[in-house]
Image: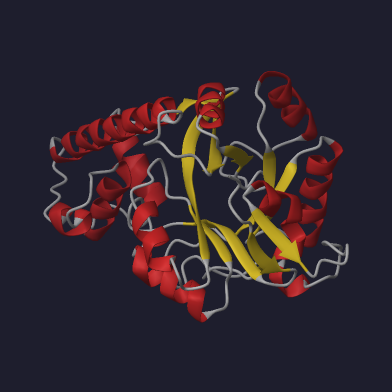
Length: 307
């Protein structure tokens, strides 16, 4: 029996890229869901880096509160000599069909912990004591980002970039990723939808070009692009929406909120901007008159905000 679709209105707020303390965020699942409810959001997704540890708590807390939390994860992947972040939605790693995806996430967790331990050894063996490590980790699984944050807290670096440079000086890259093709294959087997995160954000390796996307699609069947993102201009959004539509890909939207007011709070993207994506997630958009996104519409949401 097909489950009833979750009904949202065309202008209901949605946000499909949110982080919690399970990875590098500051929101607890309860705090995040409470914020979303208080601000009228109807559908949102928890997408921590390489883990779905917060998803069950967030979904349970959202139940019967008029908001739908989509299970998600932002997987760190590798393709064509650089890292890409892949947002996977709707996959259940605990199910029989999701066994391969669950194994992939478990492998990522083990490798992240091992990289963090190597980072600790590299710093401490070169005279950089980390007395605040236990406080920073705060009972969570150890991650490389915790080592970097501890290095900052204990005065060895001023920000995440300089902390990472310090660790790399001693021969540890902290790099952990999985091939993009393997991730997409396992995610699809688990019933997941694969969206390339923030393709227009330059993290030092450049932004996604049309030629790159075409090469990617020839080998790897990703499902869509995050064409609405907190730092995009209207030109960026128009560009990535066009890239997606010309290739029959889905369009999603996400703030990449990590904590209250950092870098931004969840952003109220109107559901009508991403109707096909919502439909793939099992949602029905009511009151939709055919007007999606166009330049100048709700432009305040597209202007970059200071972090």
